[in-house]
Each structure stands twice: as C-alpha cells, then as structure tokens.
Image: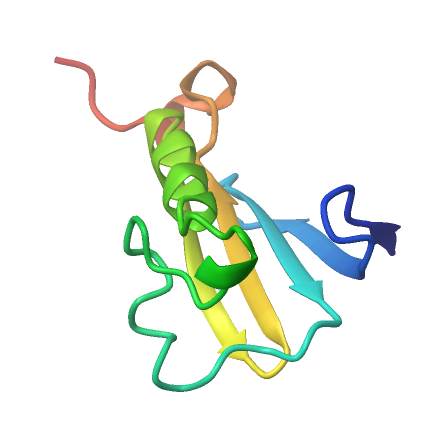
Length: 104
C-alpha cells in the first residue's frame, strides 16, 4: 500500500507476469468509487465530475495515451472500489525465438 501524492489517499496495487511475458499491474484506491453511469466515460478527455474543484478530466486520458505510446494499455476493472489494470507488452528483445513469431 502506498499514498497518492495528489490526494493523500491510500492506494493498493498488485502485479504479475502472464505466460506471454506481459507485466500486469492492478491499482485500486480507497475512494468512494465510480458511479455506473460514469464508467463508460472515464477515458474521455475532459470528462470530470470535479470541475468545480479544479478537475480538468485529463488525468486518465493522458495516462492511457502515454501507455499506448509505450505499447501498454489500461482498462477499468471495477467501479466499487475503482480498480484499473495496466498491461505492459513484453519487450521484443527479451522474447524467446519461439514466442517472437516467424522471421520475414
């Protein structure tokens, strides 16, 4: 468990490696969660439920784009509590030849 530098709330995470060599990181916080109506919009740029308190709605959208630029992805796993799964693609130079696929 670690503290968020932004909100000060406790966060929890777990990680593992898939048989394909992907690194999977699950991150969950202890906040009030996400309403079912907002879960479909969470990755939209500028979507926020906290505009009055300075929220821009860019956080999750920026994270998703940064991860995508590095062959990684993020998905919402649950709303109560809010839990995200981040999946990092295996590095091609570390794959065995059998997993690397046919050479052209």
